[in-house]
Amino acid sequence: MFLQFFKKRRFKKDARILHDALIKALEPVMPELAENNKHWKYNGASRHNVKAGIRFWHSCSELKYYEKHKKRNRKLYNIHNIGIRRIDGDIIKFKAKITFNLLSIVEFTFEEPLSKMYKLTEINVSSIYIEPIEYEDPDVEKVKKILKNYTQDLLEMLDLDESFEIELDEKKFYTILNMEDGNYIGINSKGSVFRLLHDAGEPAKKIAKNIEELLIGYEGYKGVFEKYFDS
Image (cartoon, rainbow, N blue to C red; front, top):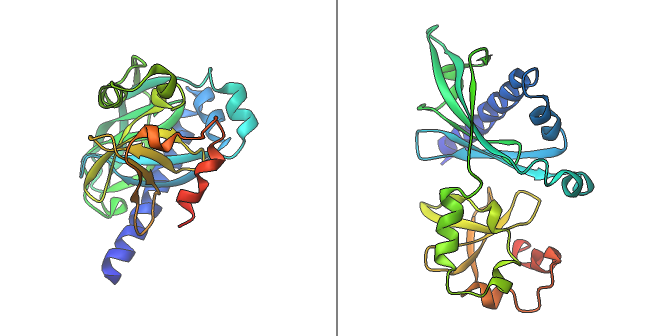
């Protein structure tokens, strides 16, 4: 138990070092990405696809900034050919995914602890190239398919264009409402609704049988859902 605790803490520390080093390395060539990062709070990291990457979590610390630049930052793209030096001196190349102008995922194989395998601050971006991603990504399409039987009026009350797949307790969920604080409301493949609380003892807790039940009385103010995150 204690070993797992320290292993998890070490992973979070290493992931933060990698996140910040990558943002710093990209700043000269992608200043808009670095500027946007300054207005968001880093909330932590989790494994992405088991041993093939890391997902980073953020929440907006300046809501006025978020609303003002929401349209400008609605960008999705992959950055290929980023280099990171291994402890043995070799350099490996990896890919990073940028979602809404934030570093969301890095993809490369690793064993923990990260800092025993890589020199996390030695990032090379001299030969990167950028691949724009169509806005309708696979995760968004999955969510829309799960919710295909609901009316357009209901669907427009959700943040479906920001949906992504998340794995918690070895179960897959898809976000449908961004609480803007690093937490989400999501659904499973059957359409049941869960509050998704990152880094909690019970990260996924069912709160409604479907979105119709969830949205009773909802008029756009997400504060009505805060009760689900307090317990």
